[in-house]
Structures are given as C-alpha cells and as structure tokens.
Amino acid sequence: MTVDDKLIDRMLSGEASDNEAAEFQLWLKTPANLQRFASRAELHSNLRRSLRRRHIQADALKSNSKASAIAVASVPQPQTTLLFESSAVLLAMTTGLVTAACLLFAFLWSHRTEAPPSVDHAVASVVRNVGGMLKKDDRHWVAPQLPAGDYELRTGLMNLGFGGGVMVYLEAPARFDVVSDRRVVLHSGRLSATVPPEGIGFTVETPEAEVVDFGTEFSIDVEGGTSEVHVFDGLVRVNPGTSNQRDSSKSVDLHASEAVRITGGASAPVGISIETNRFIRNFDEPRLNYARAIKRLSPVAYYRMPIRDRGLVSEPPEYSGVVLTGEGKRPPHAKGVFAGGSLKVGVDSIGRGGRVDSPPAFGTGHFSLTAFVYLEALAQDGVVATNFDSGHGNFDISLNENASLQAKIRTENPTTFADEVTTTSGSVLPLKAWRHVVVTVDGENLKLYEDGKLVSATTCDAMATNNSGAVWFGTAASATQLWNGRIDEVALFNRALEKDEIEALFRTAQEEIARSQ
Image (cartoon, rainbow, N blue to C red; front, side, top):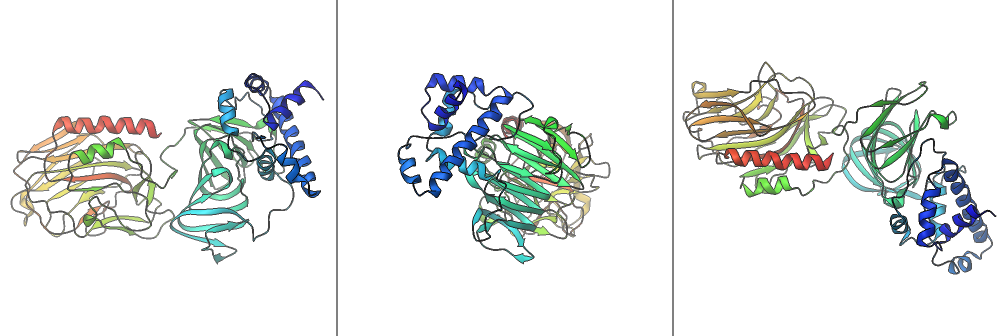
C-alpha cells in the first residue's frame, strides 16, 4: 500500500491530523488523485458491506466509533477544483456524521448500478406543497413520502426533501423520476436545488446532461431538447450527453454566477448569461431590511406577495385579498425582487392578477404607493394597481400606449372623469428588469418616482376620498389590461412619502438585491 493510500485510509477513518488534512487538501487538487480517492472510498464501502453480510458490522463499527467520511463525486475532473477551503472546513463537514460506512454507503448508493429501491421505500418527502397536483403512474399522489418512481407535477409548486438535507423545488409542469435519495432524473420542467455539505454528490440527470453537485445552489430548465444549468452559489459539474454516451473530456465545472446550455446532439455545453429571476429557489418570504424599512413608514396595507396556495396576504390581515387565476402553464407565482415570491400576471402563467375586496379607506386626500414591477413582455395599458371602476375610485398606476409608466388620480369630484390628473414617465419601462416605483399625492402635486428618482410631477388638488370599492393588482376591474410580468412588495399609505424617505427605501432595496442574487 502506497503512502497515498495510507493517507486516504487515515482520512476515511477520521484519524488524520490537522497537518495531514492540509496535505490531503493539496493532494486532491490533482484530478487523478480525486479519482483515486473515489475508488479507495468505494473499496472501504464494499468492505463494510461485506462485514455487514457476515453479521459482524456492529463490532466493526464499534471499533471505529470515531470514523467519519468525506462525500465527493466519483467522476473524473477535467479542471482543477478546490473542494475544501481549509482543514477546518474539511473537519467541520465530517463532524456529526455517525460513521464512515453509513455516509459512504449513502454517497455510493447515488451512483449505484443495481436496481432502484422498491416502491415501498421512501427516498424523498414533501416539505411543502403550494397548490401542487402530483401524479404517479397516472394516479393522484397525496402521500407525504415519495418512493422511487416516475412522477408528473401537473399544477403548482412542490418542495421535496432528499438525503443529506438537499432541498429541491419543482415548478409545474414538470416530469421527473425519483431514482434515490441522492439522484433525480428531470425529463422536462424547472428544478432548483439547495445542497448543504452533507448532500455533496447529489445528482440531477436530464436528457442532455448529468449535473453533479459539490455543495451549492443551482437551477435546471429542461425544455424542447435543451437543458440549461444556472449556478447561483458553489460549484457543480456538468457532464454533457445521454447516460450511455457521455464523454468526460467534455465535462465543465460551473461556479457561482455561471450558466450553460446543452442541446441534444451538440458536442459541448455553451456558456450563457445566468438568469437570477427565472427560477423559484425558495418558497419562504425572508425577513429583510427593506420590509422593516417599509413598516417603519407606517403603511395602511403591505402586500409582500409571498408564494401561497391561495390568497393575497396583507399586513394587517384584514386587508387581504384573492389571487385571480386562469388557464396557462405556470403558477401565478415567480421569484420576487429579493427572494421568496412575487405575483406573476400573464406571460405563460395562469396568473390573472389579484383583487382586494375590502381595502383600507383612502380618505385623507394624501396618498402613496410603493411597489416593485418587472415587465417580461410588452403589455399595452397593463395595470400595476388601481381602484378605478365605472367612474369610481381614486388612483391608477399603469402603462400607457407608449409602454411608459403613468400615475393617475381623481381629485375632489370622484364621479366624473373631468377631474382626473395624470403624470407620465418620460422613458419606456425596460423589459426583464426590476424597477422600484413610488407614486405620491400631497394635495399640491402628483409625483412619480422610479428607482429613487423623481421622473415626473403634475400639480393637482388633494386626491378624492374613497371609502369603498375593490383594489386590483396586475389587472383592471374589467379583468383586462393584464400586466404581463411580476409585481412585488406593494405598500399603500394614507400620506405622501417624502423625497428622502423614497431615496432611503431604494438604497435599502439595492442592498437587499445585491445580497439575494
């Protein structure tokens, strides 16, 4: 046995010193050594399984109670990849694992060649279901545990938990196979995964490639003979080709903020721009500084647009509403400006906007609305928010015929259109970019801000009072004028925000956006 094998064995048994761990880290930088480590790890696993078959595993594991292991993918590495930053990280990853045999077995199970587990053995669990309808063998699957098998997510969103703490987020429509607690085959649809260190080696296979994770956050989109892989944090390896025609020399390592497209029949992956807004990577609405900043300004209603199976939630809850849906491919949810969700209207979704039947009263004559908007495709007259309805109501924020944002209010006579006042941005709203929008009325001026800057103002009297009537987001009262994009973080005020308050909000938003990408 060579010195290298001795070092591997000491690492696998947890007997290595800090200096040896540092030496091992450097040794792993050589691609051939990574392959050698994987082979040696497999040998250790086979020996332990042999002991188990002889009914003496318990004694063997007892004598190695301090053992721990490192799980890494057993594929050749075409590029130099640093798996661990330091020996401290290496030791932290192994702390708390029960035994080397258990972890090695779990990792090698994801790369096994034998038959998958029986249908009675659960390999994944439903963590959260947001309006999802899951089918297995053409039957509606409602159990919280998922055995290996073929599945189709017909509607909604689903968060699945896999081995090693791996979190997978699926968006309908999607067709996928759960192979094991460490392997998924995505035939079509969108998938996002968050993989902690304990889940290293988690693999997603598509018709065009295999994606092996090294502890990261990534998303995959499979559609029309093409697979895209987008990496938001960490590192993944992409092995292009079908399962029986993969050429390791074509493999690429993707780091944070990198993405590739693999087309069936193409010789190699092609680099593309990463898209941070396409994928739903978390169902939770995080607690953010921006939300706290909004609340300090005392809105009368605040709609964070979290991903939910029903309802349009307000803070306070008495002003909550409903999400309007129709026919389409995707749910009325999408990634928000920071994280979590936003209300998706039009495009390829079933979203038809939102309606609040019992909104707060707007009776002070002063008013503000803040929101983030994201336009995915041109939408003439598309509405952001309004309470206009058959001559009633007092505010409307929408696109005009030139695709510029405009704010419109009614002043002291709310029953005629003669008292409408409009102010319009001087620029076209860009596509596929979040824009922070604020409208204020102070009894003297109607003002429109975009990204913290005043872009338009018109003199006007106080806004007409309106103590009844619904408020719509992303659509008009006639169920037309769909926004064709996303709307997020809407706040309504019974006062006019000051210029410095609006600028501070946008600065806070910029900081949150930078942290969430």
